[in-house]
Length: 280
Image 1 (tube, rainbow, N blue to C red):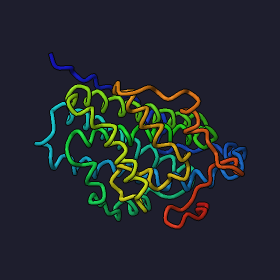
Image 2: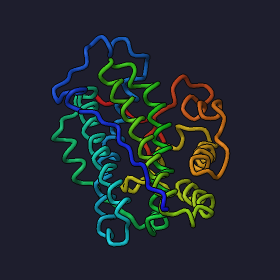
Image 3: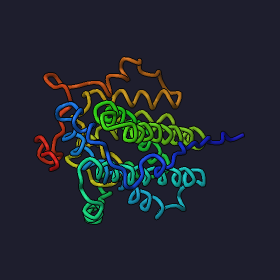
């Protein structure tokens, strides 16, 4: 009998946690460690839009939906609902922190150009989409864990809750993709390791983020230890029963590592690799 995928979703209501008109009490700005507010604003100025790019990836995949399984399409609908909720949650967070208006955010987002050509190896079929999704989402789990520790926790329980939900949601997406691979692509599991290495090499070669949702970490690889991808590849292989899980020490380092001489990982402008200017 074929294995049925067990798809999950983290249920939370954005309006109940972060209302549209939420205001962060001034005390949190006053007590945040030096540099945290400026870095957080710069980080959000990218994260907001990369979450919204999920719609372009969804539309691209749905243009080929005849090639995909019913379970994959069901998973993708859950994934999109979560990612668009993240987009709105981060818009509200960014507005609260920086004062940037929603109108300005909408204008910036409408001007984005999504280029899928450089990522074609990840978009070949359902199998490559799922493996890339696992790679992308587990990377986001540890990226958001770092952000939660460095930034979200300093601006009150409401903003902190958003960070916790982002981590949990991305973990669910990772697990859902694993479930589909195990249910529908057992015959190709032997190809996973080599394909993950291809994805990692592609990400390392990208000079920019192409606004496709996938491999958005290309714009912030400097925030993580050099062996980050190799550790998350082992996490993926372990989830699929293809290897051993990294140690807890190795996993903690993914989000606790800080470059020598810094108390926070510096935030750089992705294009120039210079320190990003604070939002005024």
